[in-house]
Length: 143
Picture 1 (cartoon, rainbow, N blue to C red):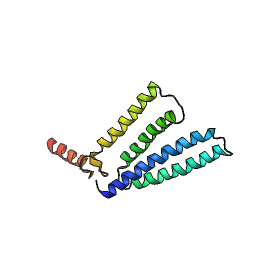
Picture 2 (spheres, helix red, strand yellow):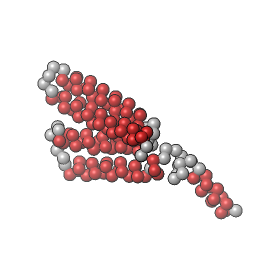
Picture 3 (tube, one colour):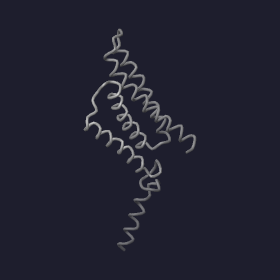
Picture 4 (cartoon, rainbow, N blue to C red):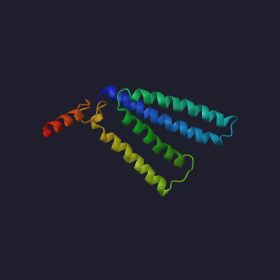
């Protein structure tokens, strides 16, 4: 993995961490007893979510957008749910657990379904010409 690509994956990991932290702090701050605790929690959430989007935008300069968004949204949801159970005392039901497994499977399927992480075109070569090649072969077969 090249250093540039590793940098972009690290940006994506940072984006996920800030998304999870911001959402968790927003919920936790509702029970803070300090003055303006809820408002501070909202301000922290806005800052963290802003950083999350910034890092996501950096990640998508080299990673396929579909893969980056699937990881960001899917793993963010996964870890937000875990933090709500482990830190905020919410229940882990069988349905919630099954949904987390489905989200994790979906993220992996999107990642593995992106042919080597290419970012352009349709089809395995990434040049957008695969559909044209199939059409040309089909029309030659009709002649």
